[in-house]
Length: 223
Image (cartoon, rainbow, N blue to C red; front, side, top):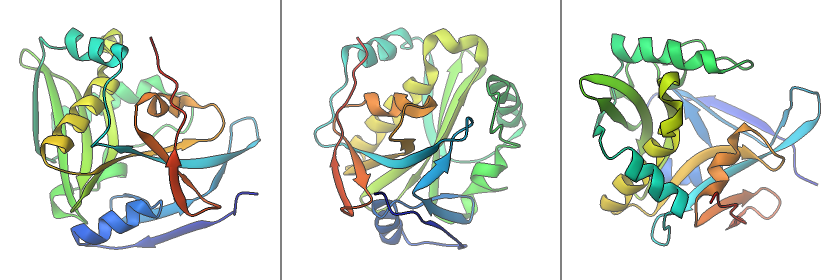
């Protein structure tokens, strides 16, 4: 039986090597609020088991489907820069959140705080442009040996381009080039959910709460 816990704390600043340790223990954070929980209630009332995920960057290779996503978006301009929130990003977020029917986030600051440059750890952002227009963005925290995806958003009218997958692929490439070992992709659930796309990346591991160990995940690849 999965142990049931729901832990949280507030912290203003965390050293890079301590962030590595926190992610490895299943912790995540939004702004200065750090949290870790093992179960959640689904919309229909059933109990779901939370499954933290990470990618072994040294052995990860892209699937045929993921390579197609990279090729399909090769015409877009991309950059990775220190995270900052501006009016253009806020407007994109407001359009992006219309895709959700439950657990609708309030603002982008809910995840990043008012000024992600001020911590609690180093935060970078991926930006994707179609000409001068910002069409997607994602955010990742960076530690000493690892990084953690925080949030991604994109223009709903660009849904056919799979920009959520695209920015995550760019994060993987960036982390590998930076010599990092792990990219933590956040929480999924043991049961089927909207977050199953995170389980489609090769060399993904999951945190087994009972064993307190990271184990290989059986990856379901999309053709």
